[in-house]
Every structure is written in structure tokens, then in C-alpha cells.
Length: 399
Image 1 (cartoon, rainbow, N blue to C red):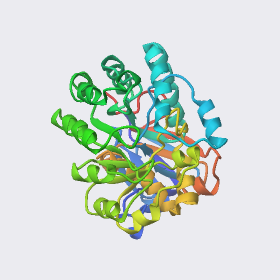
Image 2 (tube, rainbow, N blue to C red; image 1 turned 45 degrees about the vertical axis):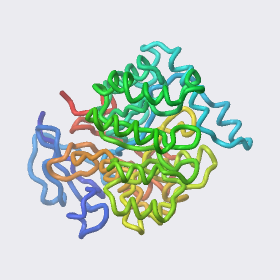
Image 3 (cartoon, helix red, strand yellow; image 1 turned 30 degrees about the vertical axis):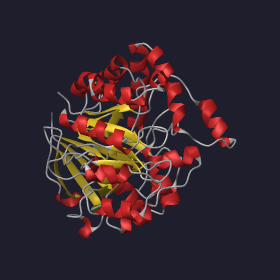
Image 4 (cartoon, one colour; image 1 turned 60 degrees about the vertical axis):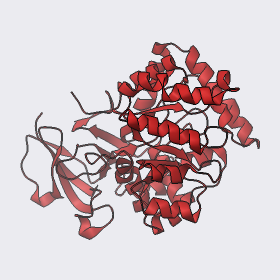
């Protein structure tokens, strides 16, 4: 792979405070970036100091920032829940039970149908600047369907999450303890080889604290790392449990007590906020300002799924975070890049500094501020993954 100079960058977002006089995003004006032979960033700095390379690409004064890291998505599914969304807009409250509608459709779908829908959504995300993505199972809820969901997801990303504990399926409604036994036993055994993470929907209508702890600890014993759906529908034990077990992230965090915030700020657990969910369900937004002011590491992700949030757009979620959660544009972009990488415990993505993977987004705008300043406008003009331009292929390290 030849070395490449991306030159005449109007504003380069490195994501590292080592640059840009210690600014949150490490911004360099009138910048350049060199992609090395291995598809890694080899150099960043002022354009006038750029070294010679094999090839050169003119950024035309545009803003360049790290590829977005979407650390929470549910892309392996079949069916449509537009009618449910329509009902919510007419006043019906969101409930976790709607997941079962997608479970029925997913179980009935062929591998080819699931794979085609997954590929379509991944490409949709890539066009909007996402270069690292986490994909969960959770719409099969049988040993076979959970395992095949993860096997399909693994074709696109190494960040796959076993979510057999999404809800209790209808056939176990009278014996949820038996379903927990399946999730922690045979299903886990079939899924662990395809997953990096274990997750649980610790929420009313899904799994309580005891069941959630049993599921997460079983996954950890199988070598998986933990993340938790927590405190989405109301106050609950999810955040505290995530911090107790050393989970990488607690996701949603819509209803938090001061004790929850204290636990997050004193742990390494990231608060992953999903503002598209609140937009789509007409729910209250998480208190991002309180979290940030308390020193909590915050990530932003889409939670792309067919029920509570069917958006694949990280730029849209950034705009919501700024407008509705009172984050600054810089904080929102950091949370969608560095924050997402932290939620996945990745140091090789989410920034543009020497030694990391050359995943980058070129905006048809002079600044990242335009992501919130011009909501709904497609500003992503180029996407590079591991030093290669274009949207084709898996979002993962090339072989």
C-alpha cells in the first residue's frame, strides 16, 4: 500500500489534546495527514511541514475528523415496526415488549435475508461516516438464531455482542428462570465463539438485577467482556451493576440518581448516550451535562434498531446531543469518536494520531461544528477505513 498525503485540510480533528494547544479535539488548522503503508496514520501536522509521500490527495480546505465509532447497534433483524412508531407519535408509550415483534420476524427470515439487510445498514452507516461499529444479537432468542445472528455480524465487525438477554421470549413467559438458565448455559456456549461482549437489558419488563448479574457473570466466565443496557425506562439497578462488574459501558443512562453518577465517575465504565432513542420515543433525554460536569466519560451511539430508534446516522445523533442534551459541538464529536472507542476499549480507532488506524471522514464543510449547525444535511463527502477510501467491505481490520 503506497504512502498517501492528505493535504490542504482546512481543519483536522485529531481527537488528542496533545495537539491544538490542548483543546478537547486537538484541532490543527491548515493541516495535513500522512497514511503509511500499513493503513495507519504516520504523521499529522501543519500542511507546510508535510513530508513527501507516494501519492497526494487534496482535501480542498475541508474539515477532516476521525471516523465515527458507533458502540451500540442492533442490525441483525427482519421486519418493520413503522406502525409501532406511528402509534407512539399518537401518544402510546414505548415499552420493551415490542421487541418480540421483531423476534418473530427474525426467526422466520432466512440467513440470506438477514445478511442482505445487515449489509444494507452497514453501508448506510459507512456513507454517514461510521468506520467502527458494534453489532448485537438479541432478536433470535433461541440457541440457533442467536448464534447465526452473531456469525453474520462477525462478517462485518469484530465488535459483536451476545444479547440473548434482550427480553424473555413468549415461550418462556411462564418460566423466565428457565430462560435465564438457557441464556447462561447452552445459548452462551453456542454464541461465545462469535462474540467479544455480553450484554443484558436490565430493565422492567426485561431482566432484574439478580438475573442480569447471573447473565453477565456467566459471560465473563466464558471470556466475554460486559456492557449493560441500563436505566432507560426508569431508575433501576443497571448502572450500579455495570460499575460493580467493571463493564465497559452502561448504555442509555436516561434516568440517573446522584449515586449512579458517582458510581460512573469513580469507575472506568463509560456512559453511552443514545439520543436517537429519546427522539424516536418522545422520552426525556439523558442529563449529559451532569455526567460531563461530574467527570464521567461519555460516548454517543445510534442504537440503530427497528423499534425504538431506526436511525443509522451518527451526525444526526451529534446534532441531537448538542441541541437536546446541551453538549457543545466539540463534546459531542469527541463522544462520537474517542468516547465510542473508549466504550469499546479500543485505542486504535476514534483518533487521528500516529500509530492508529487511518479511519477518517472528510466533511463538505470548514468545521465539525457544521454537523450540529446544519442538521439533516449530508456533509460526509469521503470516508476512509484503514487508509482506504470508499464504503465497500467490512468495517474491520483488513486481513
